[in-house]
Amino acid sequence: MKKLLTTLIVILLLISGCAKNEEPTDNSKADIPSTNLHTAVITETKAPKYFTPSAIMPDGSMFGVSGDNLTTWNPENGEIKIIGNAWSGMLSPNAAKVAFTDDQGLQLLDVDTGSITPVDPNPTMGDSSLALGVWSPDSVKFVCMFVREWSSDYFIYNVETGKKQTYEFSNIPNFLSRPVDWNENGLLFAVHANKSKSGEQEYRESGYRSDLMLADIEGQFTPVTDMDDGQFALYCGATSDNRIMLVLIWEGESKTSVGLLNTGDGKIDYIAAGDNTVGGSIGPDGKFVILTTATEGGRFSVRLFDLESNTGILEKELAGYEQPRHFIWGDNGRTVSFGLQGDDENGILYTVNIE
Image 1 (tube, rainbow, N blue to C red):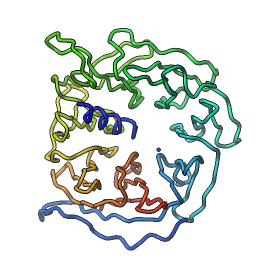
Image 2 (cartoon, rainbow, N blue to C red):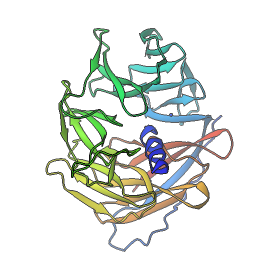
Image 3 (cartoon, one colour):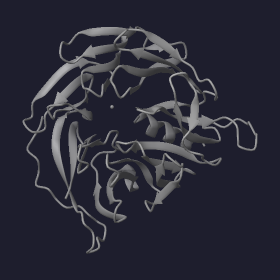
Image 4 (cartoon, one colour):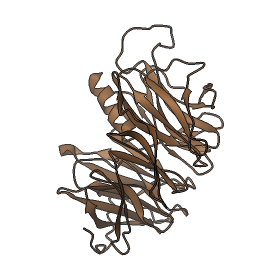
């Protein structure tokens, strides 16, 4: 179970020089039927040293962290800008602010002016450490937390008022919980259960199960999933209308299931993705998903699925020994990019184009 907990935490926390693109190559390993409407190609671009992108700026530049620098990089012209120093950074949805942590604690950077506003001066507190959470969709608030072994202390900071308030769990235990998204319907948390459905409450490092739960600002939680004991639901993104979520369900150290969760009725439509899937993302229109698979030798590969035809249309083994942390979709749902460290210190930007 300890190995399972370590793997779960790694995936949840994952809840961060340039050259011309190489010629696109079609790396599909799937048999594509003649009736399939879509194909896909993937390209690789050398990225700045240690750069891992997590979001896209209005001008098309990638935002991310390069070493201990908050960085923007334009893959079209190679322009690199250092906009601040940080251990980690989280760009607001409107790309106007960056919440970041460093040895001065939690701070807020204004992208246009470069001004910095202190939020919390403590990078650690007792046996807990400060971590970034999620922004609200209107870019007015964000959640951060002090993470302890079994639970976390949450607070919400309001950018407009400068006020920070404690966020309490009102109707469920706060056990191995973490915010994974914030949409128009509320805060989305992954929460582990410290009691079985039959009432048992023995010591278990990762609890009995984990569910996705939607919470309001007052801390009232409503389950989105209903996992059985021994199942752990991981969030892999949602469509732009939040009607469909991509979920990864762990049932053992290597057994996983991947499914499309209908948030209206809670039903899960499973995808034939195999047992070694460790992450993924769904496109904004819900027509495609990209999945990360663990391979032999500690490597990873990505697979793209066309959900309309239920067909795999691309597979690519990745460089390095890290799995993608952030998948960045284009607004039309026909491109998805992600960055990794290569086998050397240079970063690599992968871009999938769907035709």
